[in-house]
Length: 266
Image (cartoon, rainbow, N blue to C red; front, side, top):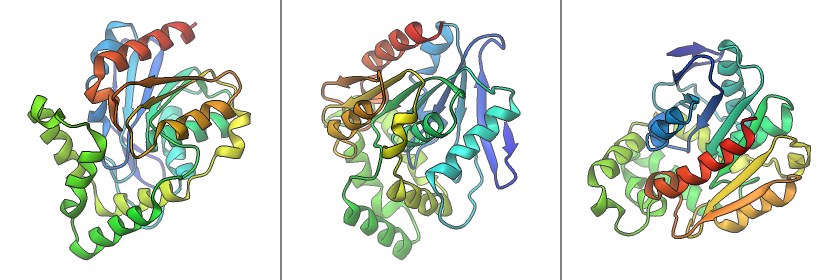
């Protein structure tokens, strides 16, 4: 389905019983709603509706030109939720850029979320800025994401994942390459300028922060910092996980996710 926010067309996928509680899922840079494929069956079996939203410039969503902010991208999510009548009580699960959006929504829009699960993310950009700027230059110079895709895949998944699940690995690689260039540049700016750290004390929604122990992009210390800033937040870690433990360690991720949702669903 497509929703017009007034600034862009945003694609979303909503499945599950209409009366069931809603889990909204927001994805990483250069992904789309398909990155949550390993979670959807478990969530449906547990009795949830699942709402997956493609961030601006990704998947089926329109790419508007110019720099974006995490606040703007969060506004797109809220616009979809409003259009669907989900004004409160939503459980949000976000990874990486999606987790940045979840933090902003929880901090700046009290009452909107029933819970937040922020995965493999950061409260502000603390990564290798020169690496990221080099990627932007490489994409601008080549006019394609092909120039950076393989290095990114190596940081997202641990050694051996490609051999264990070659079809899934290739599907995720093709999704990366399918990201619109305006969306890539706009969202890169959003991630590099993101900083919600000083506002995390405003988060009242129950929060679980989850990291991969081997994640080179948003390492455990970035995620522990988030948990330390939110009153009552919990921290969990998947041993051996890189940046996408929901894909590579899906059984453990799903166990943690369902235990959390069972506790906070009310």
